[in-house]
Image (cartoon, rainbow, N blue to C red):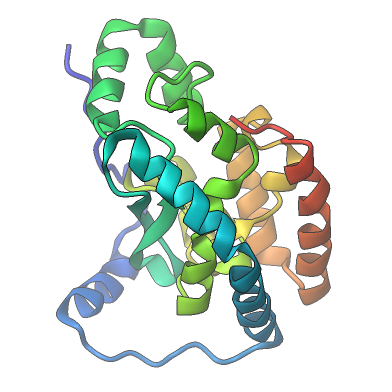
Length: 235
């Protein structure tokens, strides 16, 4: 049997986002979103943080490159605000042939496929390198996303950016997801990450999109510190 990981949109209305995709692909200019206190906070913190973590990024990037000679930064296509796609940046934590290894595992291991279908994650993931396990547990792999924040692709706080294969899981909640910028941290990250089921994660993202406040974002950022330090739900 052939289990392909593809972009599906079952149960999701796509018409509302068609214009965004067409205009994004054609390069047509679009009005920029208004500058808000949240956006000012995002850029200010991201710039300062990037300056401080630059030595860490450089050191870990060199170590990743020395593993197998491949690029240290992994750009993955994710959905962003208004349904537009962007390249989400991460320090590479997996082997170069990660996609092929995942495909082979899902075809040969029913238990692994069941876990992947339910959570989009694997408890024992053969794709992750030894260094990758460390940078994931410490969330160092997410640091390049500070660049995404500065670019305007992401925010410091928001739903985690979802991949093409995850879109259908959001159902009608996809519209709520697309109403805000995806974030480096959010309600899911401070609530247990991989210990949270996928439907619960979707519910958290929808609730955040509908009820977000500036000070609520500040509280999430503060709660992110202990969550990262103690690797809560990291996988």
